Image 1 (cartoon, one colour):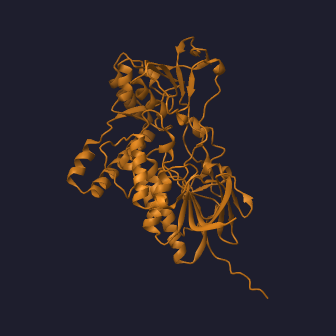
Image 2: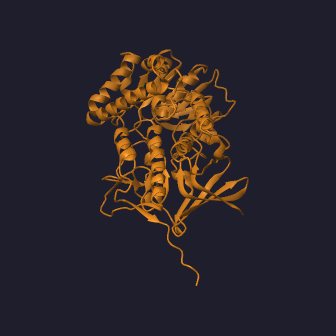
Image 3: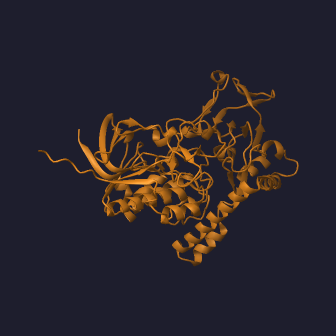
Amino acid sequence: MTTEHFDVVIIGAGLSGIGAGCHMKMQCPKKTYVVLEGRETIGGTWDLFRYPGIRSDSDMYTLGYVFRPWTEAKAIADGPSILKYVRETAAMYGVDQNIRFRHKVIQADWSSADALWTVQAETGGEHVTFTCGFLFTCSGYYDYAGGYTPEFAGRDSYKGQVVHPQFWPENLDTSGKNVVVIGSGATAVTLVPAIARNAAHVTMLQRSPSYVASRPAEDAFANRLRKYLPSRLAYSIIRWRNVSLQLFLFNMARSKPAKFKQQLISLVSKELGADYDVATHFTPKYNPWDQRLCLVPDSDLFQSIKTGKATVVTDTIERFTETGIKLTSGQDLPADIVVTATGLKMQILSGMTISVDGARVDFGKMMSYKGMMYSDVPNLATAFGYTNASWTLKADLTCSYVCRLLNYMDQRGLVEARPTRDAAVQEAPFLDFSSGYVQRALSELPRQGTTKPWKLNQNYALDLMALKFGKLNDGTMVFKRRAARKQAA
């Protein structure tokens, strides 16, 4: 079996993986790299999810790459537009020529003696092997093979169709149907108004509400600015304006949660009117940003409710019946189709097995270094975006940092960079988020520390300074040169 060698192996050809390839070309043009993608196409999340209305829940001026301006009119873009943007970027920078599709990585083993990763992948029923000096995982944080669906009593007796958004049937017709969407997160908030356009009626059934906020799909200021300024300059100004606004709102939510909560609830009340029961259906028990805020572009969810095409029901499920769902309150919800928008399954590094010098790595016991590398795991980084802002903001910074680290090592003849944990650093959860998908996966997630560089900033401005301008040899990262080999006697 032949083994191919590259300086860098990138895992995943989604938004992060394509960005990583572009950064490699721009910042490390002499490095060889390959992108291993388990599926058959570019796009990751934006190709996998095909449910009605799929769109970004962040503005494209921050979800877009820092090096390629977003030029479409809509700032809150639909899934196909984002997929087109990612694929065009891959072609523009030649990343598409370095992708191996249908290559699912199952294992990676680090050898300190050789300063190499050996990467095993499955393709066409066979195993193939790659070696590399640096491994960069850009495969996201959830399981592509399955979403999360709770066990519902009586589900087998239900005569209708049950669909999870992660596996939306291509020819599913909701026209004239009664549809129940179970969930209150971003996916449910997106699905309900999209389905309501043609369905007889849509019910959003939630156990508890989430915070929702309306925002124009088009950014009028951004569109005006792009008429008068060069695209890159306009993009930079709009990007920084939006980053600053995100940071301001997040800090306000954290410092004055009661006041921020009241402002969000008041905005919903203005949308739906004084007679609507906002207290029951749109007033969460948790504080803002303990879970991600759901965007409602152009008030589409609120419009569906006001026109009577959609209804929000806050209750719990007693059981499925033959014709729908019976609630704990005794109410029956008739349903031709039930959509379980009940969440994701988190999965670190695509579920692949990682070992260092023969010892398997348990990432649940590792500590995250700068939100991208792991204690005592050399030459491996992960693109993991923000939870309180656009994913790509952090992914771009991570890609740039990895390239900077690679260049630093080359200039000094170094072959290993290993974040080394100080036993005195105290642990904290990796994500301070109460969302169900996070809570279910806490034991599998790495930890963060209470002090830098182990503490997550969740702040683009701070990360920009630390990752773009901060010291690489910071006393925590331990570097090594290649060990001299003994000469035969």
